[in-house]
Length: 413
Image 1 (cartoon, rainbow, N blue to C red):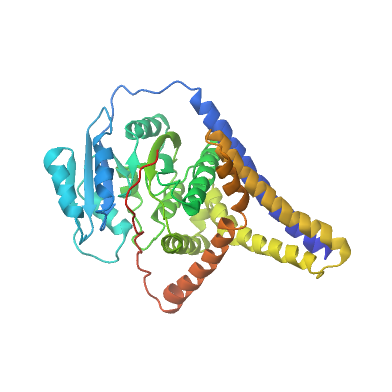
Image 2: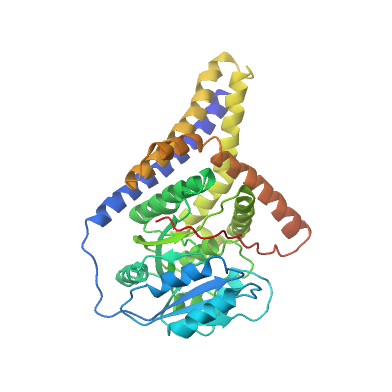
């Protein structure tokens, strides 16, 4: 029992230490980046912005207003890719098209399977620009976001593009949106910056990401069966030898789920997409070579090892309280649970401090997230695994794309 416990605790603390180091490296990268001189190019390549849209009438007007304010020195065209919308998405988009020459409304032909990947593949069939940018239909990027992403991509040799920072514009709506915003600050920004600082590895975020058209065409475009198309594309680009640098100052604001029902639907789709990617990782040796190894290990550690160890730490915690273990084991198993809570919470508070957005309510949210938000992830992963096994493995069906519901826009920047 002693040996088993030591192995479990060592591996669990190793993961906690690794992600803590990533976060500290991310903090260093952010501080270093703020002291660097701004890069300017002698000429700027042509860029297309692709916005997949399906029944986005609630948010598309604010999105297109933000697109009109983008300040980019080179050629820029914006395409709304309308995937069979039945609301007023087309009407709003056509009104903007009639007023602004660089905005174009494009109806996407019917096709299967439904989803963002198929729509983006269609967009790639008619654009001729060197780079393209993907924004979700609820995004409001800063005016300088495109320029900063292009400057980053051009300045890094062998870059397939660049990845920006996604912020939550409705963070103050309720407790759930505050937790999502804090999660993004830690895992989508600081640890993303940390991976780039330490390993020169970046991960696509699904939105606010610049890509070189030639690189995407070289690897065969988007996988139309991937529900987490950003994570899947990240691994294939890395396997092909490309880099994805991080530009934390290129910011966009997006709307996050405001109800638990919407959140569960969205994250179930994300997790099913990542389980699909795990299946690819297990069945392809190329996903374990060189820098791709880090991405593959990260998926295994988050969606398999870390979740298993988190559940194990709960068993140890409650088992110790209920006297399931001998007295000599009580202290170390309690320590295992306590350390996981402390490290997780310190990471969240650290992100608040780095963003210079600290307040009593944000600290309170960080303190309770381990007991609420983190545990919900475990439940959703279990639910997603059951759905994936039943539909994909047993019934041999494609799992349908599930669009995230939108809410009336309340920009909170």
